Image 1 (cartoon, rainbow, N blue to C red):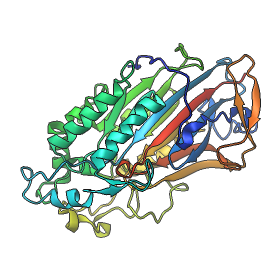
Image 2 (image 1 turned 30 degrees about the vertical axis):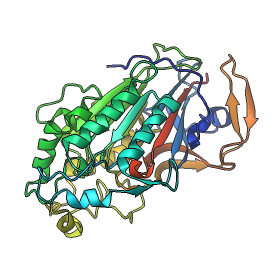
Image 3 (image 1 turned 180 degrees about the vertical axis):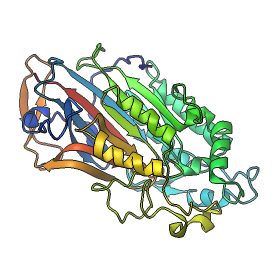
Image 4 (image 1 turned 90 degrees about the vertical axis):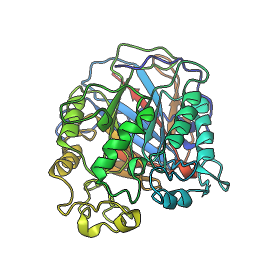
Length: 422
C-alpha cells in the first residue's frame, strides 16, 4: 500500500549532481509535448537530465489533462553493487567464497570521497549518511549488496540500513531486489535456480523485509518482485489525494523475466501511475542500449551457452543453450514498444551490475535553454539560472539508468517532479 508521508525539511544543497532539483518544466512545457498519435496511452511526457550520480525527471502533463495546477515531487536514493563481505564463509563452501572476498577486500572510492581505499563495508556505511543528508522518500537496493549469501554480511547491511532509515524521523521506506552475487556460492554444484531459491529464502530474507511485498500469483515467490507506492507530495510539504509515484522491483538476476513477473508488471502499469522499475541487470533495449556492452545483459542476443565466458571462473551452472527465454524477449519488446514513456507510464529503469554509469535513451534529445527555477506561487514565479552543466541536453521520453557500484562510492539520487500546467 501507499507509504506513510514523511515530513520533509527544506531541501539542502547536495554535493552530488542532484543538488539542483532541476525544474526544467517551464523551459520546455509546450515544446516537449509529443503528438497524440505518438503517445496514445499516457497523459504526460517525461523530460530527463542526468549526471553520473544523479537524475532529474520532470513529468509534463498534456494540454488536455484536467488534473489542474499542482506540483508533486519525490526523491529516490538508488544503491547497487555494494559487494559487502566481512570475511570468507567456509561454512558455505571450503573455497567457494574466497575469490569474491579477495576481489573486493579493498576497493578504491571513485565517487563518494574519491581517492580513498577501504573495505566495501566501510564505504557502505558512508553511503548511509546520504540518507540523512538527502532526505529521500525511498531507498532502492538493486542487488549484489553482499558478495555472497553470508548471514554475517547480510545482518551487517541490514543493521546499517535500519540505523540510517529510521534516523531523524519516520522510517524511510526501502525495497531490495537480488543480484547474482547475493545468492551465488561458487563451486556449490547446484543449479542457479536452486541456489537462488534457497539463499533468497534462508539468508536474504532480512533484506527483503525492508519493504512490503504484495501477494504473488501461483508459481512465483515474494522475492520475484516488490512494489512501493509513494503518495503525491506537493512543494512545501504535505501529501495530497492526487496519484503518486509507483516503484516496482523485479528480480532478473538470472538474466530472465518470467511470464508471471511480466504479468505482475503489466497489471501494475495498467493503473496508469508514473512508474520507475528497479532491477539488477540492465536490459538490452533495442535502439537504446549499445549492442557491444562489456557485460551481457538481460534480453541480450549474446546471452547463451556459447557466450558464457565466466562460468568456469565462477564455478557455476552454464547459461542455457537456448539463450534468453521467450518471456524475457517479449518483456523487453513490450517495454520499448508499449510502456516506455511517453507511450506508457514507465518513466525509467534503475539498474546496476555493470559497475559504471550509463543512460540508455528512448525518445528524443533537445538542447536545453538556461534552466528556470520556479517558486511555489500560483502562478509560479520563475527566473533564469545557469544550469548545473551549461548546455546539458534535455531528453524527452524514457531512460534506463545504470548506476555506478556502491563499493566504489557509486549511487544515484533521482528527483522526480510531476509538474502540471493547465
